[in-house]
Length: 305
View 1 (cartoon, rainbow, N blue to C red):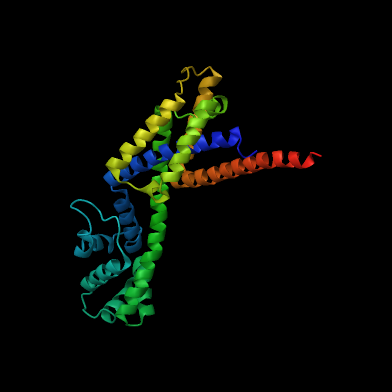
View 2: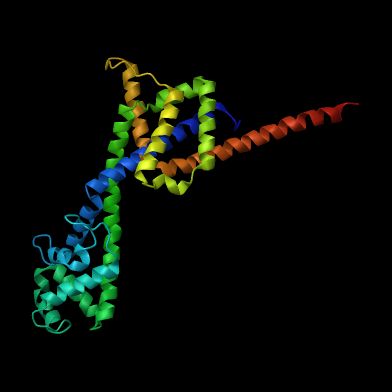
């Protein structure tokens, strides 16, 4: 049956994952912002582009350019640079390095002589050759190079944030006793608790906006999430297990909290989508059951002589 205990247990669990995932997201964003993670990763990507592995070339000079320096506050690295700003700043860096004064002439010749000793200079020289003396084309080509690099930088940032997210999820799961196994057992065995959680989840799915699951409107968002979590905790009311490593109950708790941490690392948008799908599945099952019950008496009437 669609409208089964198993479906209701899943809905309850998914709802809990959404609430705690939102909390994890906000804490992660706060930490990343305080540590200027985006800026640090961006700096790493820029220096990877503009410096050789064994020597600094253009990276530091690029980051000191006014076009870049004033994108962020004092003593903070910019968290985002668009390709047009990058090319403008980079052309200025190269022109400043051009002692001969002829960007596509003497300076290009100078790079050609030095390219065998530097991979970065060889790459820039090849871009200038491809531009064939056209500065606008050179900027366009360099902008494409920057965009490709930023795609990789975004991947670096996501992996870093994923690690932070998992650590925070792990901390929350153990500190707040969010044990997936114990919650699933309680929802399975206690129909009143299960139905109350399904009701809360249904109301949440109806009113919530999926786009808000990644918002970081810190103060109001945090208060609302904590309020929802406290409401959920008052319904579930899990007891802490005995902290005795010789008992199976303790290790089952460890597994349950680890499961929660992994689930939270998937993010609120993922679980919000699952909640919508499972809720529709449950609603469809309920409608089918109601239709069957309605048809049964009518069929009985038809069979009477």
